[in-house]
Length: 242
Ligand SMILES: [Mg+2]
Image (tube, rainbow, N blue to C red; front, side):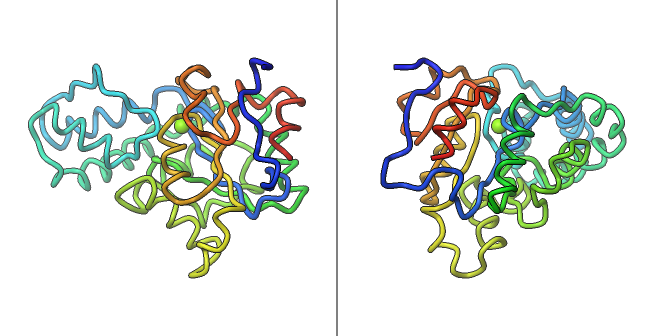
């Protein structure tokens, strides 16, 4: 098997080119943005609790911000009732450091081209991300991906309590009450097993790309429709396109 291409879309199913919508994960999939938001998160917990959280050993990939807040709060023996205060503080701290965030944000290879190609094919695109809305908007606002990616109907860490419900919020915003009729024609593109679990929970198709911290081996054989090393190889994208 071509090591870059670990699974093909099922022949009867539509590929990306005829999708009703593509729901992009942000971090590690569309872009990287340095450590501004991560540092702000630690500071936010410290400001709220008076104690520096202990992030070592916690696996953050693909988690939504309220989950991350709860995990960090637990390291300083505070419970989930402080999550809203931490997220509020996170929002303010990121706003204070917007210039650094923007300077450090990089769109990942091949993303611009695929986003443009989807737009050309008339496929609606938004995001399903664990970031709270203001932080996602700050990251994406410093790229040229918005538009065609639409921020308004996206699903964000502050849209719902679980990643699957975040995706449902995005689908409701995109399609209205009849959103469930469209799920088989929608794709999530993400970089972690949690993106896949979210897609499966909601009935969406899923492409995983190993452009974040999870290596391609760990994304392979876990049930994604397509697994790619990245989005820059035209041959890989062609297969994903369908
Ligand atoms: Mg990600």
